Amino acid sequence: MTETTNQTAKPTGPEVIKRFLRTLDGSPGVYRMLDAENRVLYVGKARNLKNRVANYARLQGHSGRISRMISETASMMVLTTSTELEALLLEQNLIKQLKPRYNVLLRDDKSFPNIEVTTSHAFPQVRKHRGKKGKGQYFGPFASAGAVNRVLNQLQRVFLLRNCSDSDFEGRTRPCLNYQIKRCSAPCVGFISADAYAEAVKDAERFLRGETTGIQEKLAEEMTTASEEMEFERAAALRDRIKALTNVQSVQGVNPQGVPEADVVALHMDGGQACIQVFFIRANQNWGNADVYPRVAEDMSPSEVMAAFLGQFYDNKEPPRMLLLSHGVEEEDLMADALSERAGRRVQILVPQRGEKAELVEGALRNARESLGRKMSESATQTRLLKGMAEAFDLPAPPRRIEVYDNSHIQGSHAVGAMIVSGSEGLEKSQYRKFNIRNAELTPGDDFGMMKEVLTRRFKRLIKEDPDRKSELWPDLLLIDGGAGQVSAVREILRELEIKDVAMVGVAKGVDRDHGKEEFHRTGQRPFALQRNDPVLYFVQRLRDEAHRFAIGTHRAKRAKALIANPLDEIAGVGPGRKRALLTHFGSAKAVSRAALADLKAVDGISEALAEKIHAHFHDKG
Image 1 (tube, one colour):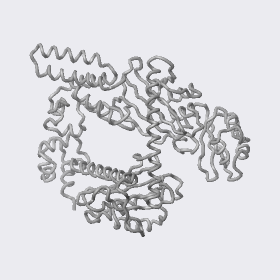
Image 2 (spheres, one colour):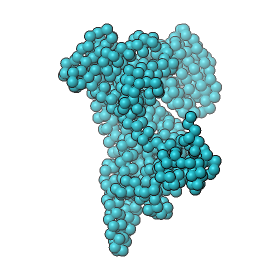
Image 3 (cartoon, helix red, strand yellow):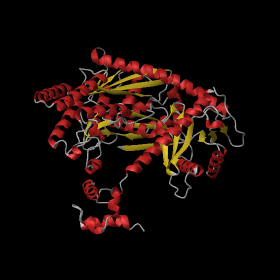
Image 4 (cartoon, one colour):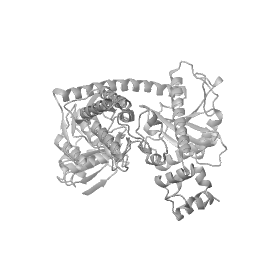
């Protein structure tokens, strides 16, 4: 792979492209068009670079979007590749990395959860999993965490599999609540043999592969046998498991019989906006659907949007064996080859015209159409609200990015700060941030001090990462939960950081701390209120409540983690087995911390060296 570059600030437009064209040959590769400030405008791939770039060497005959792009082009860069397939893969990587203005872009490239059956333990755990896959067995993807949780809940009821961590499993001396409510067979205390538990795991895996009929027949036979042997309690438990399994099948919705594994991808475009619905079909079961709203232009064709979506969406996800599309893509064979290479097996792309597959696509297309309609309605409302914000708070223009800050703590303990973000698309949850308060010298409950730390860290990092403000991460408006004191503190922070053009509004509870009586504080102005029925007031209340919810949730998670923390986990060399031995011998971690060295050495599995390390951990703090 070789790279050619020609960076010239002037002139721009076709003349630059013509001059650059002289350096190209007919190799496949990827080209980048850059503006006068070296920002990437567009990334494209070509089977023949010279022929493809030659199309841009004239200004006539293009859509308005492409004409603008050509006129802004001040330089170009080219990467030649060995094959067109390699060029396609490189193009998608560069688009995701550089986010060019004139390419189709996915707004939120989130991952989707899977169900993992662990293989590193004698009694496997069944759990939700996101991110890079390890050595376990994986089933999915599911459209949402809620869909995974529902299936996990039913798996526990049917197969009685554990969901506790390995350390919890090793440390238990009696069954947990899940055993009491018939959601686990309590392998941690030996209430089920390893062979019987392994068989239940195999049944769960068969269920996740869609082999439900055989499982039901097997459970029915076991229930009959238990009844004949007058083991009525066991028979009743098996009956409940069969009922739970039937319930799983009934609530899964559309379960296609002729499509064992596919993603159904449907695109609807309207007014320069687009919605893509993806339905996940695995093991002949519908595992939910997700909607994606890519950034598009009005003159983009459906095939162009669909091709860009497939390349970016499956860049970090394993494609299924079949893709059912509402619109075809150009160079379909090349796209199928690219997806097959990522999956390590053949991936088939179809645009079905009849039969069950076409019905699946039509259902997804209907969802895309309805979702885009709702989105456009919400966007129009959001636009009106942002204009109202500009009028209410004397802003020069409607804010594109609003950041709302709040703190949460209990008398200073487990203190956290929270930031939420809202913009033209509504709440942008991928941009939310939490801040663990680090300053140990703060007086407990010092909200001013916490707010100062949060904003200082936030804006120092922003200045470091984007000093020229070229990204969309700089806010136009800060909403602070508090009155004149908080506004004064924030103003001082922004002054120290030499930030002068970010508007700020403090939202105080007002009289009786009642909704609708909020007072708004701005630097150099008297506090004022909005009419109780003003939509802008409701909007601000929702933003403040969302920030409060996020802060409280973060604080509770931090507090819960601290409550279950075990000091033995901090000692290198004390794994689950030795931790269990210590807890069994002494009864609690506190008793371990108070134990004499001789008593620690007397515990089975604790060597003399490890006993000295444990004793030193608790007694050599000074």
